[in-house]
Image 1: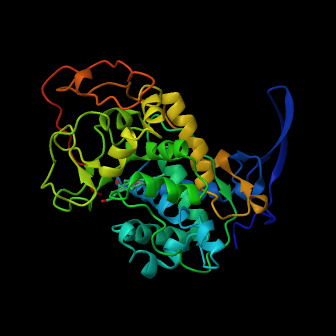
Image 2: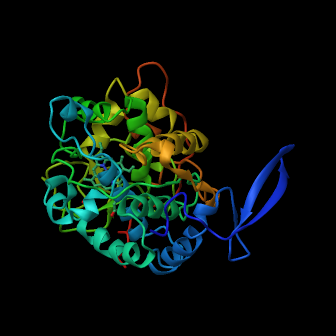
Image 3: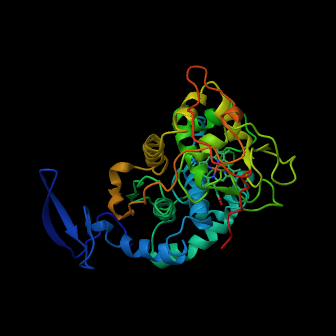
Length: 363
Ligand code: HEM
């Protein structure tokens, strides 16, 4: 296996001084890249390959969105409460969704996920990584293409999955807030961490909620990791971008934008509304909270003591390309105040005709 943490690699050691402390860095055999741990060296070639051939030359497009969704659907297959009942609770971020694709893609919540599993399969084989490592690595590299994203952590060393995750571990958009918080709680996440993870819906679209309008984004800036998701989901919904009446969908505020019932309810529930609102005008907090929650998600079910920190292979994302605003056509009056203890932040409003949001192009 090429990426065993203890793999012997020919590498040159160099000593550099950072922040007044002496740190030992390793120069990889390519003579260019330096890392903290030599076991991470082969990841540079994987990174460059997927940036070019999976993510269309480093874009924050459909494959990045799908790869990020996949990190979640693989990792959340982890249920200590099932284990406590003597059942198999799933191996977490173990790649089971790819290894046992024929089983897990049959689960209703995984509708459409087969597309990115199949695209990633070629790269997993080519680079001889475990599926669990590859899925989390691709998610972290992919998100770095979205301006405003944090540089996510990446730990290497997930063994191959041995069994499929059970059904019903992935929440559905039509689940109640109680059920969503309980499911995440079972996997070890607080209500605030659930909201932090939902920053992912800032770079996201739906193909299957309303199948007549694939690629319909959740906010007006699906290629930017920005707080627009936390702003736009708080606006009063008035329309369906497509047919309406779809399970898990509620009305959205702008033509071309789709809203999940789960996002809508979490933005308005007393347990989560104030934290949701606190991220609406705070890119830095959004980044920091998402980074911390993703670090936890990416190693669910794994023995971290056996893993190697290869975060220095993940590119540093570009700074945000947007500042928090209300897209043209609506105003602060359209915000549905839900937090009982603080007012929703006052935001600049774009001028111009009612915003209509184009779909995320397929590639
Ligand atoms: C309450 C929990 C969640 C629910 C109910 C939910 C539900 C959904 C649904 C229904 C879609 C649309 C799928 C489609 O029709 O193509 C979607 C897309 C997406 N979700 Fe979530 N999600 C949740 C949490 C998360 C988390 C924690 C992450 C990542 C950390 C995530 C990342 C994404 C991404 C990136 C997409 C866009 C995929 C694309 O554009 O192809 N979601 N989610």
